[in-house]
Image (cartoon, rainbow, N blue to C red):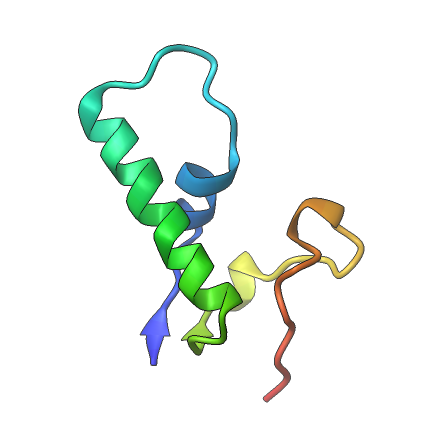
Length: 67
């Protein structure tokens, strides 16, 4: 099982304020691909720091798994 860091969510989901560099575009595309795999069922672990409120609509597609 892989650990999903919060930076993946930041790069994938948030809208940039300015034009992205080629490196930033690459990171955003890779992050979005990771989130698609998670959405398709790939298991990941997140720390307590990065857990989301179930009512946070932007991330409502994230399935909460209890220990």
